[in-house]
Figure 1 (cartoon, rainbow, N blue to C red):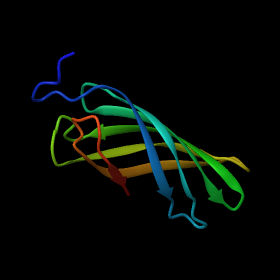
Figure 2: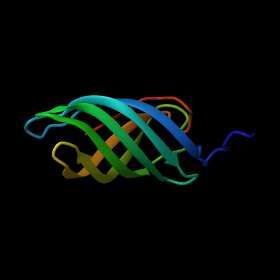
Figure 3: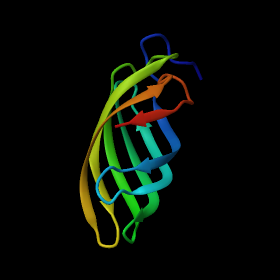
Figure 4: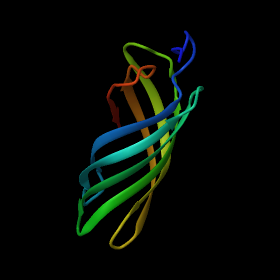
Amino acid sequence: MASPSAGQSRSGITAQTHLMLTTARPGFPGGGIGLGFRSAGRLGGTVLVTAGDRVGRLARVEGLLSYHRDPSRRSGAGAYATGGLAVETSPATEYLVVALGVETTPGRRTGWFAEI
């Protein structure tokens, strides 16, 4: 299998682990796993499942779509925007999710990301 050439991003399915802290009152601290898909272009999608606690709510599921500014960058950081829906359990509560993020080495297989 050939590596992406200059100007192409890496497409495929990615797995991730994450820590989360929401700023809504009361907050939702937790951690979980995610499964994402990145197209050969600038678009991506992710499903996240997070276990945590917010006044008895134990789980949060998110479905997100993302737009990556520089998906082929092999060093340094790249910016992206993401948005979608989140649902928390006990009782079911829905949220609109909108975030700006930065990820390291978006054109490689490994890295980290941070969102606000």
